[in-house]
Amino acid sequence: TFFDRYIIAIVNMAMIACLAVLLDKLKKDNWFVRFTSWFGIRSLELYLCHVSVRRILNLTGHYTSYVKYEMVMLGVTMVGAWLLHKVTTEIKWDKLQRLVLSQH
Image 1: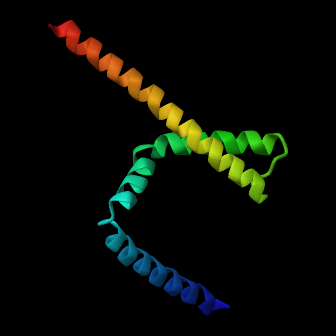
Image 2: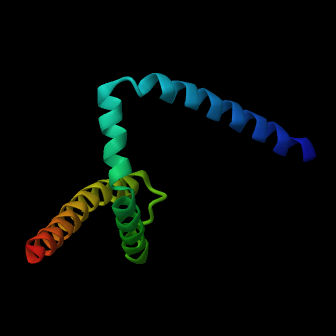
Image 3: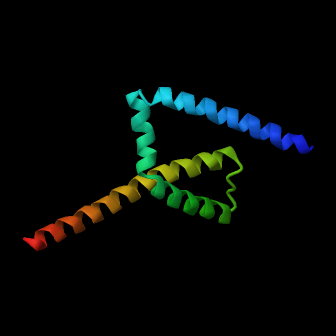
């Protein structure tokens, strides 16, 4: 009905407020900061790998609506994002070193 949308919106906002309080309390835990930082630092790589892996799985008929394929997608995405971050960081560092050395 018409009011269902408003009820759902209120419930969602209450859940977000609870999550914000929980995250505020968890930010003092070192493991939580390191865990979320890992994802934050690699967010672009995670996105790019996730979209690519999901597309490949869907094209090959392995739909991620099944839990086992979702788990495969998440695992491959995490490893791919880690590798992509390593490679791009090395390339950026190498270019930066060459730039600095060429100025001296």
